[in-house]
Length: 73
Image (cartoon, rainbow, N blue to C red; front, side, top):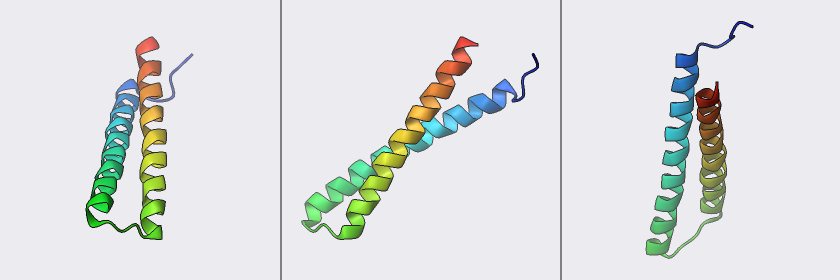
């Protein structure tokens, strides 16, 4: 059966998702450090943390899954 997506394109997408997910989690950690130093925690910071950690974990997991899938085939 013919492949519908070029392997190099899929590999680039996997790499982008891994980098983006890692950067998002790193930004979440940096935000926690900033909030700890400042001592205040506005409600928007909690939403930002949910977005950083939730979206970062989801993207990182998807990138690693795609990378594993590419290595298997």
